[in-house]
Image 1 (cartoon, helix red, strand yellow):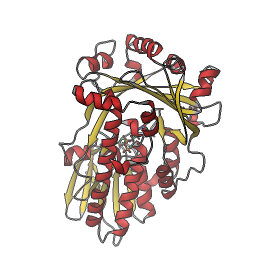
Image 2: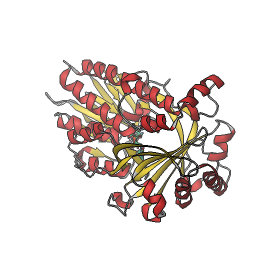
Image 3: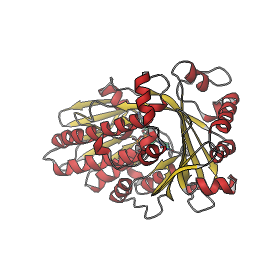
Image 4: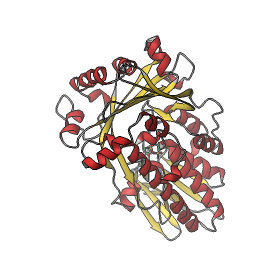
Length: 414
Ligand SMILES: Cc1cc2nc3c(=O)[nH]c(=O)nc-3n(C[C@H](O)[C@H](O)[C@H](O)COP(=O)(O)OP(=O)(O)OC[C@H]3O[C@@H](n4cnc5c(N)ncnc54)[C@H](O)[C@@H]3O)c2cc1C
């Protein structure tokens, strides 16, 4: 085994595990605060976008500026507001709400460009963590190790660090899945383009929700004419037969809750497209029809009982994963990193800083989860009693969905 690191005289050293959004935010902010940083990413090569959209909030922009990855006014595509479409395409309601939507790949590019290659290591899969008073060692699958004063676990929903330190916290299936897809804007008819590219648009079939918005196109291009329309269609799927039906490939392999897009069966995709024609506004049905490679995502809740264990800080999806209705995944990871570095700069020592971080961000994460559960409750396949379902159904009004989905304000009420 080779070991790198150890605390330098007077300096503070952080090992960041995971080099996606959360890890990059943490690494860049710590470095700017004077820490020696190494970011250890499992993937052997540059991370590639899954191609789907993300909603941005002002807090995300602020964190990018603080991290030295200022996107200026080029983070994404601006829409003018929101619109809810009925099955026949009638606009049920509208709301003015300018918002920037982007692709994961575009936001990642700004952060990665701000990160010197020397501190970012590929092919480093965390296997195990050892702790001694005041120090922490990360052991990697390739036999190497890194030691420091702090380990930031930004290794996502299936976090190796969390599974070792807090094994009781596991993702829980929410009872529904999302069909997702992208279509180049020039493939949409003028009528669909006009409605779908200027808004965050919704359609609300019984116990389902379709929403879509423009995002960057090929090569993360945000110029008009080069963008894509991105949709997310939530549908109840029961845990046993429903999941098995959707996630089993043509050769009979059951992929559980994560199937590569090219393994989804033709009949499953054809059924989904036929349902789109039956259930959705014509603009959305058209977008579904023209999407070449739709993909499936099962929806989970994950809640950690602690965000700091010894000298390990959990961050981003490693700690809390909320249903996507809050549109907070990347912004929450950025906010965690900002709070961690702020606490390290103001608390008397690292242990006090981690205690402060744990208190602040655990409460915040729990609020995000509660709000997201509430927003998605009416779509759950089999988890709710009739009473609970009736409660949840009341929340399904077009106005409520339109005003509460993917906004970062009002969290204090949860
Ligand atoms: C390649 C990629 C594409 C994505 N695309 C989208 C998208 O299009 N839309 C969207 O809404 N969200 C997307 N996400 C998820 C989104 O980034 C997160 O929901 C959110 O930003 C929180 O980020 P995170 O850094 O906490 O977790 P994640 O983004 O999940 O990152 C976790 C990172 O840790 C690494 N990792 C995992 N285990 C280990 C280990 N044992 N050792 C070392 N490293 C490890 C993973 O390879 C990954 O890079 C994507 C994530 C990735 C990794």
